[in-house]
Length: 130
Image: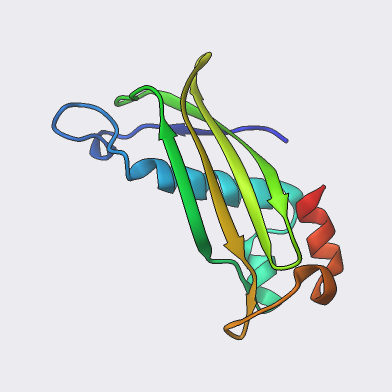
């Protein structure tokens, strides 16, 4: 899988000229959408199947600042999974420097109720955990 690349925009920076911490969560979502698209099971496919996957937990460890025009390369992997949840690990770099590591955990819902993706949509489940 190819890493996702995000160029920091001017409006994503604060008065000190560094990327505001809240934007890293957006970068994670962009990377996750790109990763799912690369697998062929993007949000459109999941939602067409009646599945949504909200964030239920999130961690970010900021190591170095980024600034306007920096290109943040984000690699994503499945950190863990169960019948009802999946956790992703993110590593964000500018060049060789790790600027942030993070995780996000998501559940699967169908019609607002928890669903086992493995049982209800086994093909989709196996694409996610490869």
